[in-house]
Every structure is written in structure tokens, then in C-alpha cells.
Image (tube, rainbow, N blue to C red):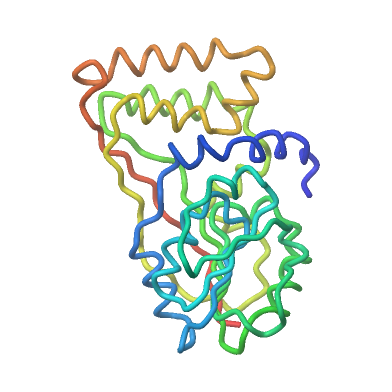
Length: 254
């Protein structure tokens, strides 16, 4: 685990309901693309660090069985349910699955927390011949005016000292993470949502930097941004604004 493991535990293990309520879900096109790459007959997929199962549930439409694991019991308690989707609590470095059975192994917005050499050893063990490995992240959002400038200042300046150091890997699309495999070129994909102000601010409150700032007695920074967002948002917060997150992937066939 990274050196700020306790902060990570505080952030993720008790945030399942908020994550399920406010975090953006992945587009169905992502799951369809990953399934198309995977060897037929697409019997099993594994989603590691699955959180509340946002990607796991999409994969369930394409595979006979999807297994999903996460260290957080709270995240799993709030996870999406499907008949062919099976959750278990466990770490990425000790995957409790048989050898050579997974046609697809995904990690969505979680690889920066893993001990990657140990995880990759487990990937090689559980992967079926020709399986696909995908490390997936979505980068910093862009939001349309009139909030865009205020958001950029909040994210890039006011929260700069509260993000865990691992966050830089997400911002770089995992480009600087070790990935000892021959890579495939992914397509350009993005998450697009139209949210009102209340949903957007609920999402902001799930951020690790926001929680860290509040724990350290710096909640005034967050509250000031929330007040500014409500004042800037059209129609007193009721109108939906377009929000976009670029999706980045590291892909390989094993």
C-alpha cells in the first residue's frame, strides 16, 4: 500500500453510499469495446478495485460471469447487482481466483493505489491465454461556463495541498505507471453528464482532497467554493450543465 494508506482507508472504506450516489458512471461503449477485444467466448471477466461496481455491472452484459473485488466492505455493500456479477472482498495483490480463467481484467480509477508488481504477478496467474488487461482512469473534468474558471482555480490551486500524491497518476492518465506489457492503442472515449448544482457539489464532496481538507480544519475553502458555485450556476442551480471527463487507458493483450 502507498505511504498514506491510512488516509486512503478513511476515504474509500466509508464512502460507498456517496460514491454510488454521486460518482459518474462509465459509458456502455467502454464495456462493449473491452468485451470486443477479449477472446471468445468471453466466459469470465474480473474487475479489480471495483468500488461500487460501476464498470463491473456494464461488463456483466458481455460476459457469462463477472467477478469483482475490492478491499472496502462499504463500497461492496453499495455495489450494483446483476445475476452474473459476483463480488468478493480482497486486495489486488492477492486475487482469490483460479489460474488461467479470466478473459478480461480491468482496473477502473484504482490502479494508482496498488502495489503494481505484485498485482501484475497475480494478473499473469489468473489471465486466460490472450486475455486483455485494462487500466482505466478518467482525468480532471471540464465544466461549461460560467463555472469553468472558478472550478479550475478550486481544483488546481485551492485543493493543491490536499490531494494525495497518487492523484498525479490519474491526472496523467496512468502514463507514468509501470506497465510491463506490449500496449494496444485505445480509442478516444469520454464520460459526459448533465448535472444540476446539487449533484455536482455532491460529487465534489466525494473527493479525497475535499475530505482531507475538512479533516484538517480547512473546510472554509470547500464551503467558499460551494457558495460561489451556487451563485454562478444558472437558474439558481436548477439548470443542468455539461461536464466531461476524458477516459484514459493502458491496454495490453496477455
